[in-house]
Image 1 (tube, rainbow, N blue to C red):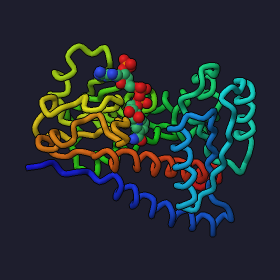
Image 2: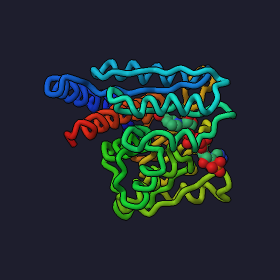
Image 3: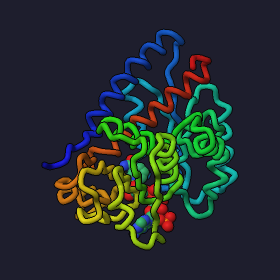
Image 4: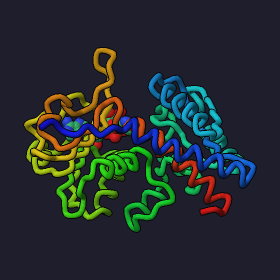
Length: 286
Ligand code: NAP
């Protein structure tokens, strides 16, 4: 039997409807609405699209957004000054610096310049550290938070499950692994230096793939009845594709996310959710 397709678009719409209602209630109660500031450096076409999508998503749920566009060649000091100004601004609840950054800018320094209480991307070491040590960050990074919501939607049993995460980035792989561990899964993290990737993925009851290589995971690499979350996005012949051979794996897995329409929409919904939490915390409502 073909796998259940986990509909990230529908789940994201449900989340957004809830956010919309809550934003409206908060507007009535406090006279203001959450505001997300997004800093975009340079002209990376994919980053421009993501930032645009985030602005539209804010507007759709009644939140405000502010875009700060800086030149590709901007000095690090200037970028840090912009972040400082946003950090001080009481009208701004969440700050996100769109990654990747041009070479002259040190990613770690920039991430650490965002105050943890406005770090809606959840990348500041304060939040990452709390996620790892106490499973209690102020913000869980949006994509991993979306992955966990999709696993819940699929009815995946995590307690005692073998979970394999392919990819170890700070933005996806590492926080996903920490969240799965929190749910009592036995977690294996694979990466580009992993010797026999298939041997690991074949043992997975829950498989999360976040690499960025089309069709990296075929049906022969997946256990029958596994729940598969495909985070990857690449362009192939102008089409957006994931890391998993969807058509083939669908015949073997119990549940699988499509690309597009899986993790992507949930990422944006979870970013909005984080912005709402930031607002509530800053207003003393959380
Ligand atoms: P990243 O920082 O480039 O990390 C990729 C990871 O994949 C690295 O840990 C790398 O290992 C590992 N890797 C590379 N080749 C591999 C191989 N052959 N076998 C096993 N592991 C391999 O990327 P990212 O930011 O985590 O993003 C991953 C993918 O998810 C991308 O396609 C990105 O576009 C997508 N993404 C989608 C969303 C969404 O909302 N849908 C959000 C975020 C990311 P090393 O560490 O050893 O280099």
